[in-house]
Amino acid sequence: MAWILTTLALTPLAFFVLAWLSKRKIKDSKLPPGPIGFPIFGSLHLLGKFPHHDLHQLANKYGPIMYMRLGLVPTVVVSSPRAAELILKTHDLVFANRPPNEAAKHISYEQKSLSFAPYGSYWRNVRKMCTLELLSNHKINSFMSSRKEELDLLIDYIKDASRERAAVDLSAKVSSLSADISCRMVFGKKYMEKEFDEKGFKPVIHEGMRLAASFNFGDYIPPIAPLDLQGLTKRMKAVGKVFDDFFEKIIDEHIQFKDENRTKDFVDVMLDFLGSEETEYRIGRDNIKAIIMWDHVRIVFAASLL
Image (cartoon, rainbow, N blue to C red; front, side):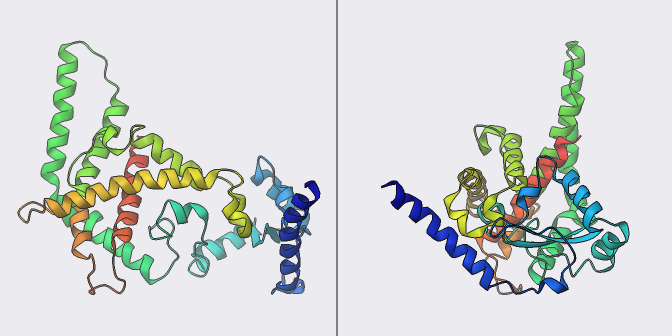
């Protein structure tokens, strides 16, 4: 039985090795110098707990521009200021794309949010929509009364605390003020922590950010992604479900209680495009949820820095 299991485990690995050897499309002579990696795993073994230190040491050996494979992913590492300027500034549009990964798949609705969407017409249109309908001076001014209401509530709270000689955590209160104002602009109203999830806004959002930043073998060796060896995909799906349930609730509330007399929030504007042919891309519920997820994460994360 043991040798059967060993054979079953090694057969796919042998297949991947042969596939890698037969499908290399880039000639080594055209690549920058770099470490010679192993089949399948590439140079992943050279990166430890502090990969930026390891890359610095490798750059000292191979030069400011080097090539290495991270798993099955061909990678060019740039270390010199001049090369970085050329890539990140002079030719930034050429290098502005975002590769697919497991976090984008399970948390960001298959790369439909601004954070993970590939650079192109869809990303530009969504960015334009967010700028005009959420961040423009006209839109910000339209919610002046909401900002005043929230500021008055904070002032009243501080006055009450002063009369009772109670301590006030101003950082936390200003953070909540910023988040509440932004939520009213995006969602039309404030939501309590427990309405999002029993853990609250910040823990779930921070969990999603940790997962998105985590090293995932499935991103670098895609054939093994379904195995979820690190358990990251399971956690990503759990976080994605929390977001999805919350945003579905918001969309349903906006559709059910639509009011033409009140100031439109960002979700209202997005729903006007639902199923519309006016845009280059057909906007569906997943697009709306992905876009407002980006807004919501940005709001809570920015507020947490105050």
